[in-house]
Amino acid sequence: MYPMKPARLFIVCALLAASVPALAQYQWIDKDGRRVFSDRAPPAEVPARNILAQPRGASVPVAAAATAPASATPQAAAASAPATGTDKALEEKKKQAEAADAAKKKADEARLAAARADNCKRAQSAKTTLDSGMRMARVNDKGEREILDDQQRAAELQRTRQAIAENCK
Image (cartoon, rainbow, N blue to C red):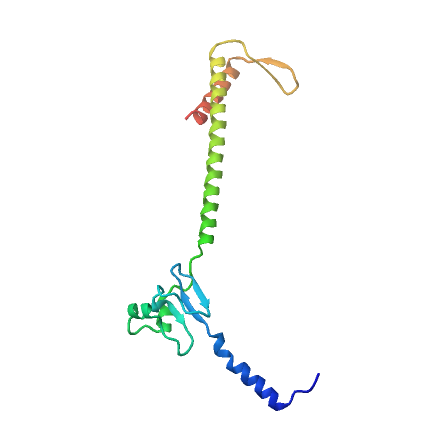
């Protein structure tokens, strides 16, 4: 590479400095509350109070100037504009998550209701059997069959009534 002479360096710097206005940016808040950055002027339907920044020497669009109050400045517009725009996608995801939670809760409640209905049916069947006066037997932990006496039958009937009260609402 050739060493750059000071004059050429100065010319390159001057050309770069001259191109800075070409990087001029407009900044405004659109109708959805989001900040928009562009090198083009905002559309005419954007009110002047929503234009936050514009290049020096640029004028406010005619339609926006007609609706703008006399004291509207970019700082005043920035103060009156919402600090953060709402993100519709985030809100939609939040609604979907809430709907999924509600559906899961509803499915759990339906499963619990089905289990209660089954327990109710079984308890009512057991109560009918206990009330019939038939001889009943059960198997103990040794695997032997035991016939229920009146006291055991009364205790079993009490447990069955409690199960009916809890599950048959």
